[in-house]
Image 1 (tube, rainbow, N blue to C red):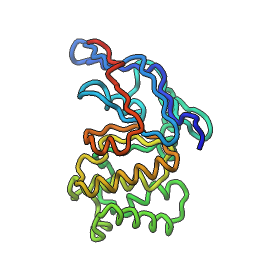
Image 2 (cartoon, rainbow, N blue to C red):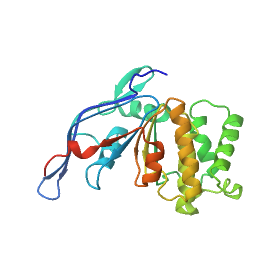
Image 3 (cartoon, rainbow, N blue to C red):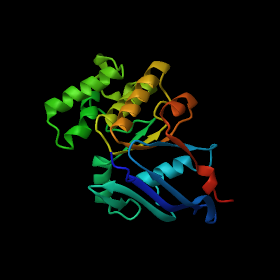
Amino acid sequence: MSSEPLIVVEDLAKTFVLHNAESAAIPVFERLRLEVGPGECVVLAGESGVGKSTLMRSIYGNYLPTAGAVRVRHDGAYVDITTAEPHQVLDIRRRTLGYVSQFLRVIPRIPTLQLVMEPLLENGVAEEEARERAEALLAALRLPKAHWDLPPATFSGGEQQRVNIARSFIRNYPVLLLDEPTASLDAENRAIVVELIRQALAGGAAMIGIFHDHDVRDAVATRLFPVAQFKIAA
């Protein structure tokens, strides 16, 4: 397994400007540096408000940083998410950079099984293989088979989260961002997700995560990263 980082955050800064409040500035962090290599799960640590979620969204490209770079190893070269063209960002998300959150955001009325198959189909996997892998993963996550042909909009929060986890883990993303992936799960399902994370790490994935459940955090973290050390004084 190569030791070369799969994600490199360089001198990242983020300040929010409230244009409806006389352009008031809310500083979050500055000069933040982080590297994550294959087999690492770096857990963002710190109290609420230090910028953990802002950092995750900046890495994924949902927030544009004030300064700095987020370089993701993609097709053998580093691509800076902060300056990449939109089509590049979408390609990176499709093939390299996965995101697991506690919320499921999908097109309504699409059956659960089809939703879980999609990441494989989009990457050229044959439909039969994609279906088999999706069924195996949904079964492992203990989602009732009667739900597989239903759209997940009416599912419980925990069931929707399991669909989201299945969509993210069915493809072997080199880099995974984990934003409270077990928040709505019971103890048995949390243990299943911990095992999925461990398997992905063993396969060489690089992960950055936020976990408020300390038992889950301690089970998967290879190191903690205190975001508060880069906090800007307001």
